[in-house]
Amino acid sequence: MTQPAKENCLLLPLTAGLLAWSIPGAGHLVLKEKTRAIIIFATIVPTFCAGLYIGSIGVIDTVGPTPWYVYASQIMTSPMVAVLAWITAGGGYPVYSWPNEIGQIYTSTAGLLNLLCIVNAIYLAYLRATETTGG
Amino acid sequence: MSAAGFLIIATFTAPEAIVPEPALMLWLLPLAASISITYKATKLPKITPANFIKEAAVLFASIVVFVVVIMLVLHAFRLITE
Figure 1 (spheres, chains in turn purple, cyan):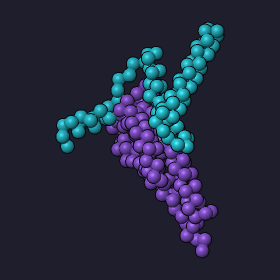
Figure 2 (cartoon, helix red, strand yellow):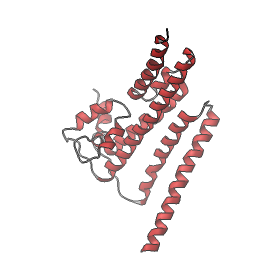
Figure 3 (cartoon, rainbow over the protein chains, first blue to last red):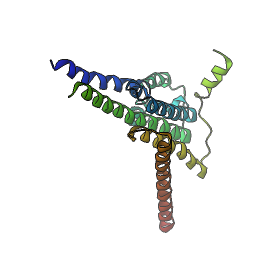
Figure 4 (cartoon, each protein chain N blue to C red):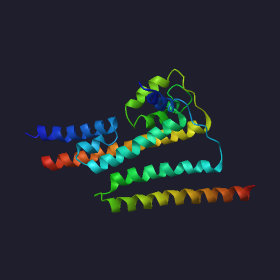
């Protein structure tokens, strides 16, 4: 009898987490937190785009000397970052010096902020699930 | 795709020309704003426009003041050691 309740406790946080990772703010939107979702989307996406504008898509670098944790934090913005990494993997978008540094800082910060939102969405979803199932 | 579309994409394929000068520190401001807005969006139990703006502004000011204090301390340290 407790199986559906247990599944709900897992399913809702998992869905919210995956949605929050796919599109910034989508995790909160599925939890009916519309205001939070709009604020998160309207903050994280422009921050990430500003990083790409300053340093070009070349700041997403998986084959160059960039440390792995920069790409790890960038990809937390969205899985779509992997597509950009695939485009830049050939080395056709070289970027150096200040534009590279500022671009990486902006895109990495956007990813880390989205990680905060993913964790928050999972936590809120877990609270909702346990409230509804009485767990 | 239209010419405008190509132009928009083109702006993301070439880096901006950034001159290393003290004004470069101003790039901190949008980032601090972004951090404070997102953090407060996740932490406030209930979001009302007045409360949210006030809380985000306080955090933004705290970040900027803290960075300025660190800058001054490091600058003073450099003056002492030189």
